[in-house]
Length: 339
Image (cartoon, rainbow, N blue to C red; front, side):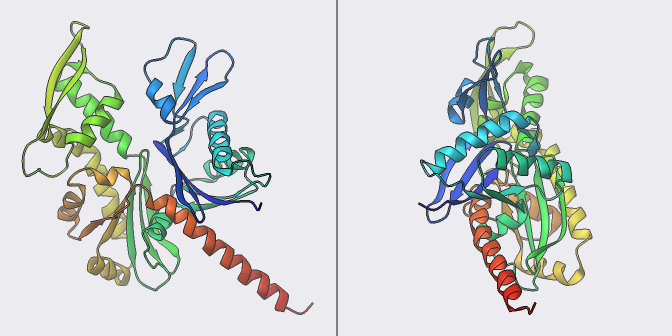
């Protein structure tokens, strides 16, 4: 049995793994539960997420990635080893891995990702920038001399890039994405309702009634938290209009980054983008009305990718074939050269 080629979207909130010929075979939260005394891994993924905020003193539940990069190297390595073994099965051959990184990742962060994947059991590893992977996963042809703009809003980072001729022309990354929207809701509820809620509850609010453009009908949901004054449980209702007010601040930060990238884009490519529109990917891009809000503020149509969450992972799979083709070309060129 030959080694697998796998692609990994190592996100702050979620890990997705793509296997050639099978598609996305794993989608789990980037969460790990550890024994506080021994450091032994107890649960990974959804099982660990279910334990978040509900563990005894001897167990800690952590997110080893923060703002799109590794914040806890050892735990990230343990998590990746578990997922790679789960996907690779009983194969004796270690897999080749293509993994995503934010567009503005520095050399230290890049080396940390590479080393973590290799130490977790990979035979070799290639890195690809998230906007490039998102475009490939969405089936966009980036090989032409034509400008393509991608906005990928993940859990920890938002990446904005202009692509052309298989390369990144202009890009910028900001540590403001899905998690910041959750934090904004937590702050709003504490200020307006005098109630403390956790980020998991805030995420449920964001998904259920959250919006960045007015919905046709106002929606609401009932939420429970802890009253700041009494320390006792308190139930209250939050509406979609309130969530829009809460989330607008981080949304404006992302809009500013989009403006910054557009202002540095060559006029010819900018003309292409204005004609074809902007591709919006990532789980954060699925917030209701985000596409309309962006389009209204920058004056360019914004289209949400059909598989906004999975397209980056799919793009790593497409990148595997491209990298292999590039290597074959280089090998053939070397074979043709006289000694």
